[in-house]
Amino acid sequence: MNRLRPIVALYPGSFDPITLGHEDIARRALRVADKLIVAVAHSSTHDKRGLFGVDERVRLAQAVLGDEDRIEVRSFEGLLVDFARREGAGLVVRGLRAVSDFEYELQMAQMNQELWPEIETIFLVPEARHSFISSSLVREVASLGGDVSAFVSPAVLTQIGEKLGSN
Image 1 (tube, rainbow, N blue to C red):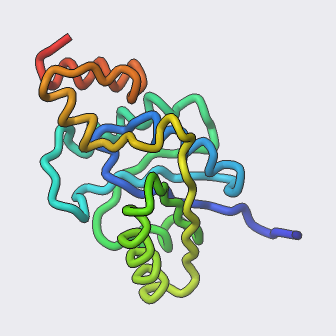
Image 2: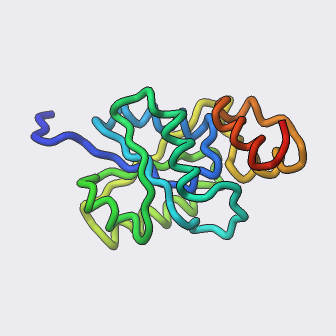
């Protein structure tokens, strides 16, 4: 395959907080993309009670992914396809943890393609040890005093502790 321009991919999400599963997907996306933009959404497409504001989520993602120079972290508002066009990204990366994720993700991918036919979506599955982790589950367990250290990086764990007033 002879490419004239690099493959730029977007990995969108709320990342509230970014988990080890997100990190796994982001790093593995670089196997198919030359550059990855972790696109932190200002607002979620689901009704969720958030823990961190958008600027905090961007900083946390930068902290855990900052060792990889092919990954950038940015926030965005509005339609993902509009952000993708502005950034020159033709690929969207989405993680699938379980079959239950597929129906929603398929609908989103098809809608994005209707809105901008040039966009493609690829689905990646996390390593099995991360397949059950979700940000909402991490938030819930942490808010109830549970130990989430196996699910997030140390920098994220520290910020969760500070936010919730625990160790």
